[in-house]
Length: 278
Image (cartoon, rainbow, N blue to C red; front, side):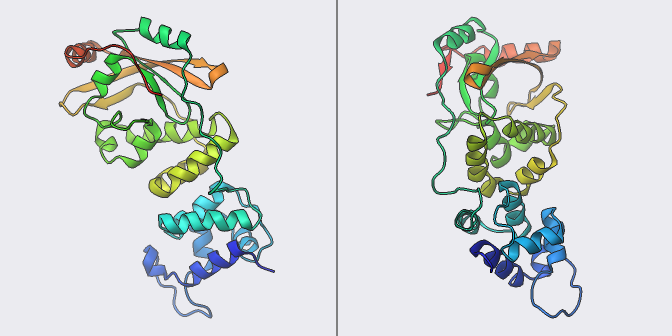
């Protein structure tokens, strides 16, 4: 007996032509649409596993597999939400409508005092999800104009994967994207990981899910940043883990004299001091 999830995937596969996904036409076949072999290859799973899902013999695909299938079928946001809902009612673990609470955005007063001592340095408090929870005025000065702090609840991971400016701001965008995706696995809990990736995957698409499935441990070298003013920065990152809060205090230090001079120029007009984002 099938499941709503398996029925949807099979129907979507039957109604998807290879040409729609840029695949070659392999000639006539007994059933219409995309072959299981092609869909499985695009999703990075075995044909046997895809068959089990379609036939209802596997009712518990992981969120990574569900996202990979959504990418492989080029589903839009509404179809992705429906796919996660079908996974839920078929007995899976991807919950779309009763999501867990996000990680706390509260920063302890002692951490804020520590951050204040780092002025006029470039520093921020963040978490593995990428939420920017508090920052120095120098951080705001250095990131002014790139769009990261435009939101009331800024998030570096969302910015990297969804803001088109990020690719020009970070010359090493692929490395930064690898870091952001890997850090999601280190988030506060499995619930918050699944909540955040379920929210982000529909808009980030394969660039995110492909990296989540690779599990590549990033090198985390110097951070290069191309400021909209035309200035180039190279920053060394030092991270202090605040394990009790599942947060990190990150300090960004100029890696060379040219960057130090650029940072001085950028933060000269800045004023107002520390900012906490609640």
